[in-house]
Length: 225
Image 1: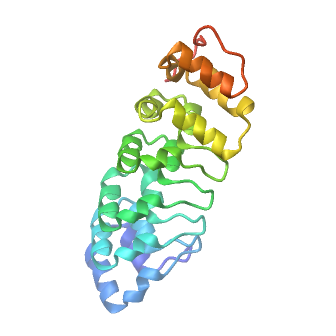
Image 2 (image 1 turned 45 degrees about the vertical axis):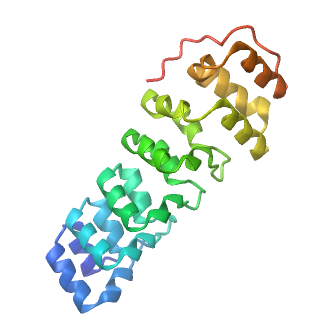
C-alpha cells in the first residue's frame, strides 16, 4: 500500500487519538516514509487533517523538516495546497523555515506563484521581502511566474513592493541576457509596471540595458486576468 504505516493511515483520516497512541508506542514511527519519501506529517497536511497536524507539531515539531523524494517538506505541501491555516501553525513552530527551498531552488513564494495561491502570496513576501528577489535554479524570481500566470491577483500587490531598481539589479546580478529577458517583462507582460515610471527614469533604465529609449509606455491589448 504505497509503503504506508499505521501512522500514515491515521494521519490521512485525522484520527488524532489513534495517531497519539501510535506515537506513544513507537515515537520513531514519525520518521517512517512511504515509497515517495513522505512522512505521516506530509500525509496529515496533504489530507487536511488538522487535529493530527496539531498533534505532531506539539510532539515532534522537527517533523516539518522531513523532505520527500522531491525535496518537499510538509511546509512546501502546505503552500502548494494553499492551506493558510497550516502555514501559520508551521511557521509559528519553526519560523526559520520561511527560507526553505526545494530541489529546483524554489522558495515558498515561488511555489505559491506556480500554484496560483493568491491567498498566500502576500502573506509570504510580507513576512520576508527578500523572497521577492530570490532566484530559483531556472534564474527566475517569483515575479516571473506572477506575470506568466497573467493573474492580476498575483502580480498587482507585488508590483508596488518591487521597485524597478530591484528588478533591474536582479537581472544584472543573475547574468541573464537583458535583451532576452528584461524587455519582455517591461514591454509585453507588465505594462502596468512600466506605467509607474517617470518618462526620464524609464528611458534611463532602457539605455542602461542597451535598448533604444522609447517615447511612451508600450501599449497592448493585454488584460491580466
